Length: 143
Image (cartoon, rainbow, N blue to C red; front, side, top):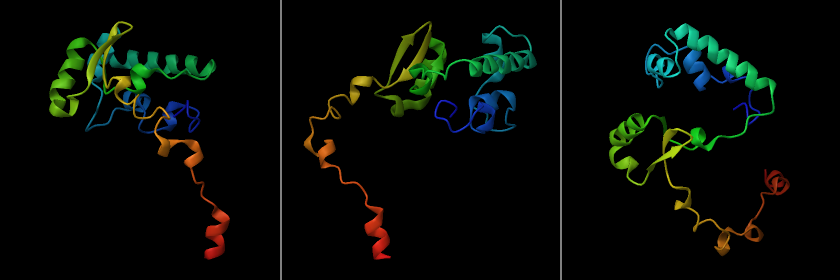
């Protein structure tokens, strides 16, 4: 939501991973903080949380973040074992999704070419000249 300009800091968006890590919910957590902390090389959760706050502050000082498809277009990201477990747990919901390797981690996602042939502009009904824009003045005149 920071990249989208909705908030200036991820802590302002309650559903962010930042908030999930900094203020873990007592129920229905979606991040295994102990495991994530250990994977990042921290013995104590408080040390990991402090480091994450520093990473975020450093990132916010620079250029606006570039979208990383590995995170924003994946169902699960992590080790191969973790991603395969998520895929197995999803059962038929993950039938057409692939586990791909990217920069030393793995992601569960749909292949990008799955929709390529359907939305290329070759379909006449989807062309921009077939778009009818909403005219609010006409709507206002009717009310």
